[in-house]
Image (cartoon, rainbow, N blue to C red; front, side, top):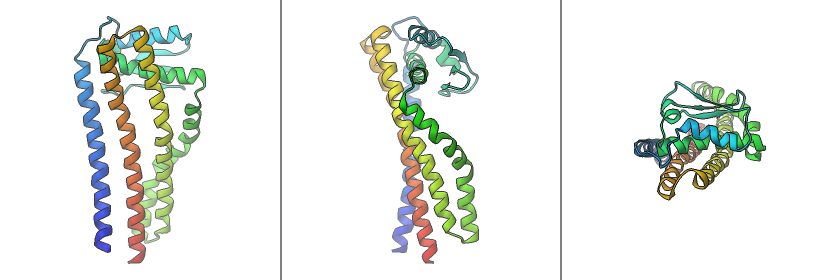
Length: 230
């Protein structure tokens, strides 16, 4: 029984690692492919983003270039900026157009009061606290033998998992909005197919992160139960 528990714990660790690796490799390989293919229209990611904002009557959000690395693009609702990495900002590749439109999708969500954003923002402060404390609590429980603390740590990781879960519909909706706009006004059918593949690969990383968190929770519960028996 003990050996089976050990094996299951290792399978969970390895499974979470492999899933994360596959997701990251998928999004990067997809990005490399579609960042090398020019879209059928001449606008850069930044220009596409700005046009979409203007067409939606959103004039208080700026599109800015940031210095962070590949696929670090994001929308910051506090600063009211769509921050695009250099390649996404400057290029007119299919990947650039898709990612830029996706981030503008988040700006549109905030502008329209999308309920998923509100739920995510409610969970965010608790997830931030949990991400800072969870592993420290678990470490203390392991070195002190006070394994009830492990349950507290698992609950904190569960809050992180909850945040990842409520983030999924937000990301899917932003991609849906982006693809609808791009297919209507900017991309032909071939480009649209590439943009859809790009955003699907990006979404897979969020799913993988959530599943990885669930695997960690189960592993910690198994470990706590095993240590308690010992």
